[in-house]
Each structure stands twice: as structure tokens, then as C-alpha cells.
Image (cartoon, rainbow, N blue to C red):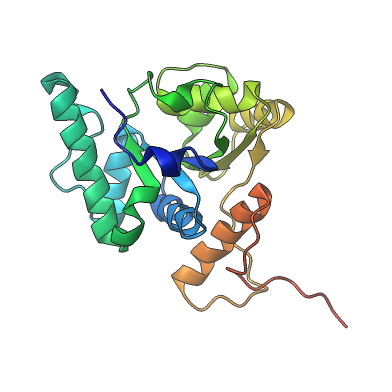
Length: 231
């Protein structure tokens, strides 16, 4: 399988955005749009359970049962499958003019460049939303797919890894795994909205989380209204 994307764009500063099988897929796509609109390249990965959540929550991928289903047809089939996914994302979120700034990678593609610390252009990774299963495997160093392996690379290379767990309430296993990741250098950023900015729409709430992630990455933004403090 080849990585079909603009090499010139990808060799600039880039980020990995991974969507797993937890509720809140729209957060991941909001972050994708925010990053590419700021001229960063994004390597996008969606887990097989993530496809099912996206189908339920956003009405996308109606004829796709899960990621990597086309792999049995060989590399050409899988490349066509990935292009189909990318095209649907572009159509859904109006990203046609920015399509060269992101690539969709199958979660089973462990030979991807981002699976190695040699990919020096990658500045960080965000797993949003992050299921408790994915969080557990990342925290315990299990690299069963490209999401988990790329996260492991971020930790070993001391790069920015942001994990956005979507679950409530947390049990002690969830909390221990989060503490383990935090101790290993990851940032734990649950998509918990604030209301001091007086959100009026769902988009306002989504933008707040997107802005917080950009803040954690050190990327200047004015996506959300910041707390001004009292006079």
C-alpha cells in the first residue's frame, strides 16, 4: 500500500488526528478543519468502531461497515477505499480546496511513515474522541493498530500526545490508565465544555474544545471566547 498524499505538504509541520469508537466524532473533524485551515498537514486515522459511531452520529459512510474492509482486495482496492473515505469527508465538511492538506490512513497500515520516530515532521498527535479501550491499550503500550503505534511513537519521542477521553462516569481503571498516560508525558484533555463563554449553539461548544486543544498544542487561535476575569 502507498501513502497517497502531497509529499511537499506532508513534509511541513504536521499532526496526527485519530478518531476512535467513542461518542463525539464531530470533535475530531472540527479539529481536522482547524489544523488544515492553519496550513498544517493532518494524517487522519479512524478506527473500525469509529466508523460505526460516525455513521450513527453524523450520517456518514452509509455504505461502509468499517475501516480496512477493502484490504482483502489488495493494495489497489485499499487505496481506492481510502480515497473514497477522504472524498466523503471533503464533501461533508467543505474541504475540497484543502484536500491536499490531509490524508486518510487505514488503522491497519502499520507500515505508514507516522509509525516510526523517523517522521520528524510530525509535531504531535490528538486522539479525539478516545474510547476507554483505546486509552487502555495506549497506556499499556499495546500497538495493535496504527493509532496505538503512532501514540506510542509520540510518547517515546517525547512529542505532544493529547488524549481526549469520552466516558462518564470514570471508574478506577479508567483513572489509573489516564494517570499512567499523564505520567508518561501525555496531556489528558476530556471534551468537557465551559459555559462562561455563553455558548448559544452546539457549534460554540465544539469550538471551545477545539480551541482548548489548539491551546495545548501551542497554536494561536481565537476560536472561543476566553475568560476575561473580573474587574
